[in-house]
Image 1: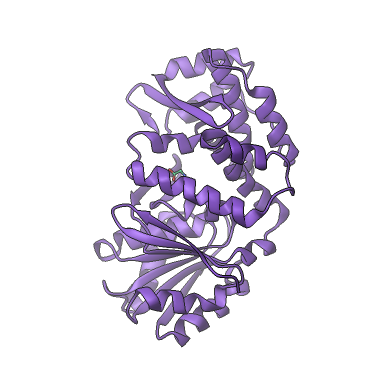
Image 2: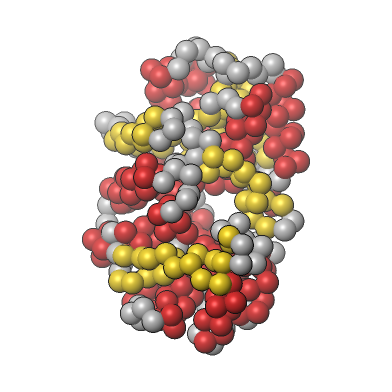
Length: 351
Ligand code: GLY
């Protein structure tokens, strides 16, 4: 096991993010260093739990914690209020109290749901994120955004609730399907495009960089953003590059286009829309990098179809939508505009 990298977040709660290659079997020690013995309610899914459930529960139990586990079906379709209610039922049955904790073992779906359950159960109990996908590692496990989807849209019910600890064993990423790993790279590229020209250069060619260093860099960027704007009132919006269009693509596809794949397309649309808005045209550069990862960059939906879904996006305020638009590689800007202007710009891009 390598010496852990520790990144500390100073938000409404202060917490550590530990990156520990090969360290999953030592998670109990890391938790015991920070928290008194208690009951830990683990939420996981049926792909991840068979791989890592035993090693995590045994490590926690060796360190003096008792555990109860609840396993959901893998996939975005599971991110429902009903499944959160069922997990809370397991916690009630196991007599989990306010001095106990939740632990999310899995990707973004499990992390968002476990965080939301922890935010509302008994009006809030602490939770630990153990991300096992690249997307969850660099984005959703950090920063305290928790949510579930409803039929009208993604993440429309949720809460800000910072984790008490994020524990990442990068070895868990090696078991990911190629498409799931690639999805995570959409979020990695996002950080470079938005805020870090050097990271964008390093990650421009897949397979040519040290993944652990890149993950740590992405998490540090996210930490900096969350510390400045925990409750998403301003610059945290930059992290949504490609997401307004991406969420619409995901929803229109009935979630057959995955999050990363949709965000990749969304970032290309953002570049095209930015150019129509009058910013420098970065479409070719952004498209080339995204294509290098094997993403399809064509959008199968028209401007009108995307617009209908965008109108129900939670990032809309009144009649306005704030778009994240690239001004140069490594620098994006937020531009608030009437929703109708977003439609006009999309039409101009040829969608
Ligand atoms: N995933 C975007 C954010 O955490 O703000």
